[in-house]
Amino acid sequence: LGSGMRVLDVATGTGLVAREALTLIGPEGRLVGLDPSPVMLAEARNALGIETVEGYAEAIPLPGDQFDFLSMGYALRHVKDLETTFREYLRVLKPGGTVCILEIQRPENPVHRGVLKFYLRVVVPALARLLLRRPDTARLWEYFWDTIEACVPPATIQKSLEAAGFTEVRSALILGMFREYQARKPARNVP
Image (cartoon, rainbow, N blue to C red; front, side, top):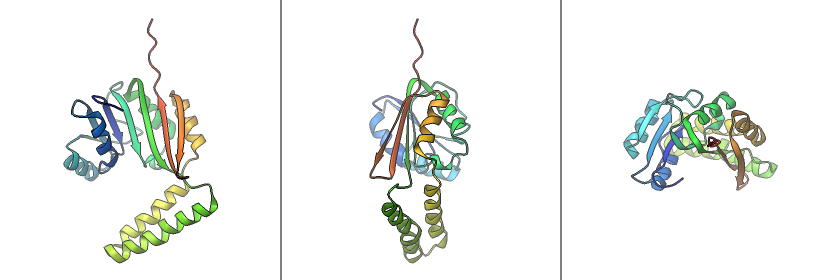
């Protein structure tokens, strides 16, 4: 990801990943945020001044072959069909373009898993109830753990990227629970 690139940030939310991408692509670059929530898109647009498009990862309402880089931060566990989603990613990327997906996975170590589960299902909801006095926020954090616990295994994600047509598929695990997946759309053969 570098200066002047065209980036699509899928599930942009309030723009946390997009904000970092903007610093790397600079004013010569173009960043589009995609999200199904008009409220989230308004937040990202107001905070970052980026172009936004309402839509889902499984059916991106944009023409093909136009982005150098596609990012998705911590939302893959919310898509319904990985292969459909990844075929859409492949379609909108330019030949040679890169996809980078950040996700939280359930820690394999049972002690780490227990600590994280307790923190997200008990500590954070209790703090939300106490400090924010909003039970809906507490329920959201409980749901957050449920989505982590139900995450698709990394091997399945990598196989789905390959099945969709991506090459150079790889992943890295950070701190036992943060996973980064990267893959590349094949460059067209030049005769």
